[in-house]
Image 1 (cartoon, helix red, strand yellow):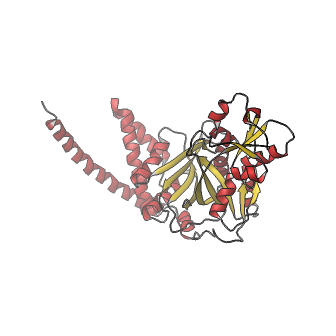
Image 2 (spheres, one colour):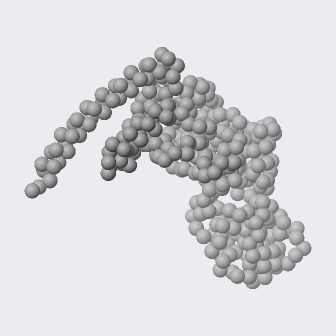
Amino acid sequence: MTLTPIREEIDEIDEQLIELYKKRMECSKKVAIYKMENGIPILNTEREKEVLDSVEARAGEYGPSARLLYATIMELSRALQHDMLGSGEQLKNEILCAENTVPYTDENVRVVCFGAEGAYAHKAAKKIFPNAAPVFRSPFREVFKAIMNGEADFGVIPIENSSAGSVTDVYDLMLQYRFYIAAAADIPVDHCLAARPGTKIEDVREVYSHPQALSQCSDFLNGHQGMTAKQFVSTAQAAKHVSESSEEGLAAICSEDAAQRHGLEVIRRGFQNNPNNTTRFIVVSRKLFIEPSADKISLCFALPHVTGSLYSALCRFAYHGLNLTKIESRPIYGKSFEYFFYLDFTGSAVNKDTMSLLCALSDEMVDFSFLGNYQEK
């Protein structure tokens, strides 16, 4: 016996499945028209659960996989209905009315930056807004407060590092404030160990820096048992603390710029765990900007705490051929094991298919926010 007759049988079944799928989607169009005429929401979670429970029960040993198959079909059916009904008009108008030019070179633009002069965030701010005179705030929340209070137009903050991963405090603040992302920049990070002049590496007892920098240099710190890591609010402020302290044996992990600004001597360079260490900074704003060259989209949402809800949402991105580049989950305060999801993917929000997806998700998802469409500088 060969596989040929079995494959022929599968081909025959597939032909039937395709025709049945087409008929089912035609029925979905009729459902969409009825819902539009009668003011009925597209998503009916109780009805979908009944159908999926029935499918799983009838499919016997294939129950779980049949449930997954039908969940995907129903997800695509809803996407079709959203397209027909023109869902998400509010979000669509918001995107189409966004300003199309970020004032990068305007010397009067008000920029608030995390940390202090000489910090890596300062370097990012100078790269993105070369003519601006940024003011500095820390911790991260103070940057968001400055924007909320109208003290600044843009805020520059780190959100992710290639070695230490996500800056979870910033993700939590993004989910709380729901500001827009206007731009992003990747900044190479080359840490140095800096101390007051005359300090030798064997004299160092305490090393101060931001938790992310300490994590990025953990191999070095673990290899020097006489050194104790001490968390500080930022790398630049750690350098300032060391320069102003009267104690002996203190050092900071910071940028060379910060070391020079505070009169410290560099006693070791290039010791981070990853020689290609890079931090991604984002520019946040209360105003939505979408430039013609924007090619990355960020959004956040919550999902019902049911099996397969995340899979069902993500399959819509695959359906539209969109490439996910980041997904981050953060716990919802006051709830047990329920999460917000932060998502990055490549694309343009004004693209017809992408716009349809965003509008559909904005209608369906709990606590959905479009966080921006931007380009990395």
